Length: 410
Image (cartoon, rainbow, N blue to C red; front, top):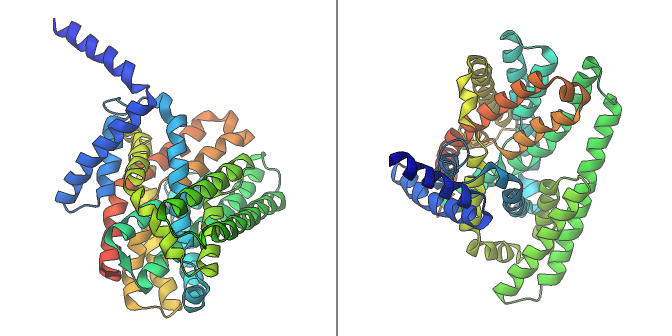
């Protein structure tokens, strides 16, 4: 009797779990309840969203089937593009003249701080230098989504927020360049590289092209929205341009993240109404952010925590990365003579890690050496997934702590 019922339940789950509409619906409902629970425990709502995705995804209950990954990726794409636009909109020339040099200094120190400490720690633990350096480059990545969501949730403002936006934005560009250089050098040592100069040149062209395309999209947004007074019209135009921009970037293997940031920055400097335009996103942001973080949760795999080797290397990766980010911000802020609050708390806002890190480690599959040596590739991927699992759960509360302590709250 019991086996018949359980069999029927499993069949019912299989029937619904592969349906995209059901998948999005159950993720939103799960996010709502887990978000409320997280807030009662004085955690950011996005921690609850991630936990909802983890529980409902393939690793646990399985109500959201792994076959939906490619379809759900479209929601992730949209959310990241809009998040990048929000970050870019904070880059007005007036602000850059005030915080430009300190932001660059802090970014470089925390970027290389994480890279050096993670690489050194993994080499001491017995990992080959080439592999440790690749993971060190990936460790420099920071997830902007959690930071933006927390800042908007708290309605934070002031110099601290400007610095945080600036460092997070520049960090992704620096991470891409660092990863390109390291994989080229490591690949050459492993006998699979196209050459250091070629790889760096390709990365520079990709970044430059993304910025130019994004700047054009920002100018177009300004042109189309400057005389529009209706919020619904502005929202339609904004979504249309950003979605087209993201699709074009992905089709030509450019960075949609950098392009959207550039679009936001151009808008911020062409129009005084930029914040009015950005604020039109408030009506769709809550469900979009909830779905985005829940989908990120479905991609986390608890099974990576069953290997002692992965736990050891992953633990070193997480601790060394955190030390590098926090110490790097502290040293960089001291060198730039920044505000004590920035020096003391900004580093905690750099700890979330997600899509960029996963995207970079999965890029290894395109390199001949790693395509052949699947066991090594799987080990590197699992170490990064362990870090993402840990940092996506602990990073948002620490990032919230950073913003609460360092910024002005409305």
